[in-house]
Amino acid sequence: MARIYADNVVFLMRPGEAARRRVERAPAPRTPSPEKAVALGHRTPTASVPATQGYSHTLAPRPAMQGEARHHEEAPIRRAPLRWVLLLAAVCVLPMAALTWRAVAHQASQQHYATAIGGQRTLPLAGGGSALLDTATSISVAADAPRVLALERGRAQFDPSGRTLAVHAGDGVVRAGAGRFQLSRQAGEVRVTALAGTVAVQLPASNEQVTLQPGQQVDYGYGRLGGVQPADLAAARGWPRGELVFHHRGLAELVAAMNRYSDTRLVFGDAALRNLPISGVFDAGDPLALAQALQRSRLLRAVQVAPDEIVLQPAAR
Image 1 (cartoon, one colour):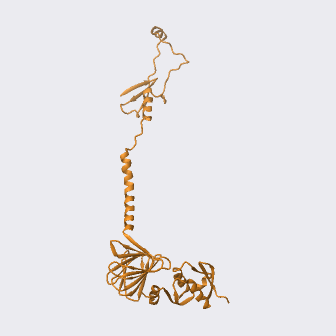
Image 2 (cartoon, rainbow, N blue to C red):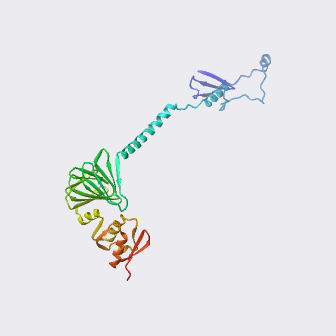
């Protein structure tokens, strides 16, 4: 135990426990008698210099302690070694680089085919068969699996020619080995129409599936598989020939179909015309001819307000 005196204050500290200190009251100094003081050469304390008694709560730091504090404050900041910084950067960057590389490699392994607005294209398939792409349609073919396709948007007709063909569209997969079928994809909705042979439709996420016979169709999208319905075979067989075949269907549906084939848009000036029932065969990609035919029937009147816009208005009374 170390005993340190400073003025009349005594600090008792154990080695290594500078923080645990207690203050003791120092013994009062003995004042010698005047005679002894004179004999010993002491001065008798006067009233102006009172003796220090009691506890002291302040104590000036020792010079050695001040030097230790300065040494602690001036100690250099330890920095992480460069190799640890590089290792941390590699841990953060490498996974992102791997994902980017996989995405680029996946894109490189796909062959893409597309048609412009108003165009159609027949694509031969590896191993036999063909795919007919309608207007504004795009598909991709896996380079390592040429019998696996993906319909990204639009409409197409597939002829497997006797060999199994798988087409991904939305959240479903369509498979067929013979016959002929069509796929139409608009946003998240997909329609499958079987024209010849049997066609299997499956939603892998929900494990739902159905088999279509010729003349049947089914819709699916957003994780739900609809019920099997009779197909409109006249309309399905018409568009590959460039014809839009409608039988007692709403005018809004016909206008939407026509707008997919042309940069000239048909728009409604009155929403009441949208449900007008229409039947007929119309040339795809010729909206002006459609507008004139509707006007001759006195069902409505068409006004071309711009080179690329025709407004359909109610017929004058």
